[in-house]
Length: 334
Image (tube, rainbow, N blue to C red; front, side):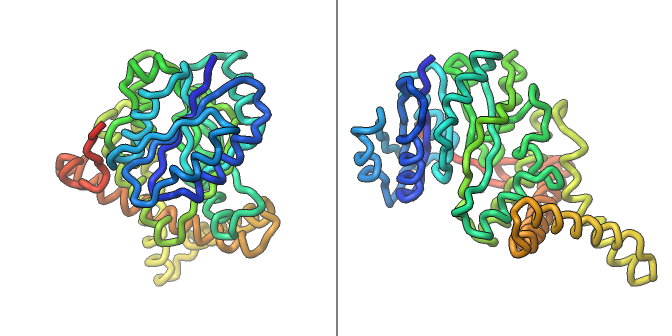
């Protein structure tokens, strides 16, 4: 089995440097290739890529901007391998990663897998707090942390693998973003392919974003979900509604508190205290525990509002997703 690592990048040369440095010290003793796809960047990473020509089997491809999903498809089309591994440019790869992937595929082969993410000690406190929000079983990020069923896992493209056979059968990622990952997983299921979580094949996901960018990101995640539900109603779950119900319930709890009904707001206070305690214990930092509460709040509010807006427009008003939310769709050019 020959692995091709596909990495789309957009104006992030520094990130590519860190990612390639981590791959260059991999303890995997078999040959693999790295395919860098520059998605129309104005600040390219070509010079950084050239620095690794002697340490990695690597190729660089520049194309016009058409989004991360289409760039991954482009990379898989030009790759030489029979199994593709996809990373986001803001990931750092543990040296044992490829060995863990090969071990899983040898033991119980699957045509598509996903792995979880973790935080390095060198990450900023905000990055660690966001990582907690995106991975904790107490939040909507639980699936990234591995709480989803192992044999029905929806891989996320910051850390996933797909066989050449499955890519060619599915035509890869669609043009929705975000949302291209679960869209691909569902289409693979419907075509008879299986997906699975490789719990030991994790990456360090740096997420170089601030609070405002994080809010925008999770808001887009929320908008994408009702669109996917409208495309694949058989895969809709009640849990997708939880963030919206959470924020609506919080508003109701505040209203009831004004009339002396304290139990609902007490439940929210208990939940946030639980978040704070668990985040503090996991990160060994009171500051990160506090920041994690902020991150989870932004996650629920951003996702919940996005989901509600999209649900009204797409599911109730029956608007075309591409017209209702054009910012979620790239025009495919490759």
